[in-house]
Length: 172
Image (cartoon, rainbow, N blue to C red):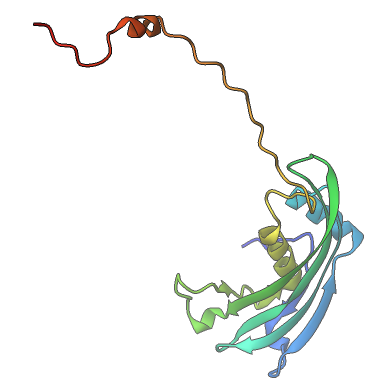
């Protein structure tokens, strides 16, 4: 089986995580930011960093929590102008060891592959999922375009309806 190579890879060997857990601070370098921006369809990714707490979980698995911080350029869907925004997102991910069994479909758990969890890919996936698909600058609003409706066409029967007698006249 071929190993996947990520643009921003920080592999963590699961069996080296201490029983009380550990903290990891990771950041993407300039080359990794360029590659990730291309993958995510962003004009530019200035920075991507995270502070993660990793603790053992459920018989050989890991619970990873922390914070992602990024500075990205996006293009506004309203003005079509690029703008820079600073983003911060919480991270909470769970990983199970293959020997601990398979997660149920209701559980949001990933499997540990080859004894390694890639912390860089966790940040990249979180950023990809949290980015607004319709970005706009702060304060920008979409004003509806109101089209003038065509004046109603005059029906030729309008004139005939005026000739129709009104009231309740009966013939004797």
